[in-house]
Amino acid sequence: MTEGDSPTIARRRVRLALREAREQAGLTQNQVAEEMEWSHSKVIRIERGDVSISANDLKPLLNYLGIKDKAIVTELLADARLARTRQRKAWYQAPEFRDTLTDDLRKLIEYENEAAEIRSYSIYYIPGPLQTRGYATALMARYEDELSEDQRRWRVEARTKRRETLLGRAGDVQILLMVDESVLRRAVGGPVVFADQLRDLKQHAEDGSVRVRMVPFSLDASVTNNASFDLLVLGGGEVLYRETGLTDEMVEDQEMAAKHRARYDRVWQEAADEADTIQFIERRIKELERADTDRPSR
Image 1 (tube, one colour):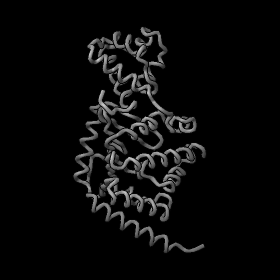
Image 2 (tube, rainbow, N blue to C red):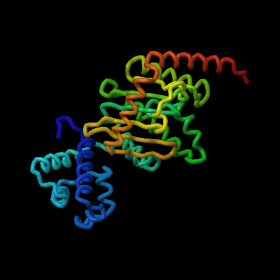
Image 3 (cartoon, rainbow, N blue to C red):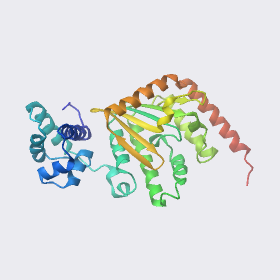
Image 4 (tube, rainbow, N blue to C red):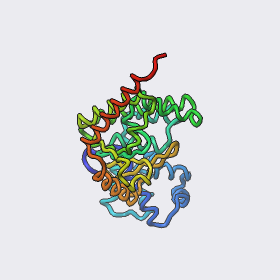
């Protein structure tokens, strides 16, 4: 256990160690549940990180999984104790958010609070934590056939809280945003709402809170085949979050995350740099302002 680690990082370290040990032993979750006299759902929740395992439960489980090295056992027990020391319930665990956010999205939010680095790639819209309320509201309105009004409202509220938390950590977390040119051209919410969004993004790019690069239409970049995704660097490695429309998934496979990271880094070097991207945003803002001025009054 590293000094300064959080309960989130400690819990992740324990559950990944348990899952890896189970898979190496060739055991199924059902077999573990039967041996430990637990429900199958308990094993699933522990390995997903939905719940923390107690030290009393962990000791016999480690023995069953063949983890007997005293140093490793001591570290995992220390992590298990730390993982159960949450001081307060996080906002995204409240009923209204549990009912409207996916499990993987809530895990992403938890990891955002702990990440040292966040890399986002988007081909459709400004990533959630950097969306203004007006932009997020307009974007959610597009899902009126799939989501209820309450679901859309709470998702907007979640994006607002993510934004406040993430930008409030400026200086503690490095945020890299790479967007397709279409993201900066698609006027979600109309000229006024989108211009406000771009002004906000430009401000954060200029004050150093966020590094932004645009993938221009002229660049044939293979990363676009992977749709939108986020890569987060945590104390226990790097995780991948992928989102397509209303479906999403958290991928904690290090090999998969490494492949996306390599592809991201390559295209980041080929994309328009921060200065050129900010200039493009400035031009778009002026275009949107003219479009709003030219609209006939009612």
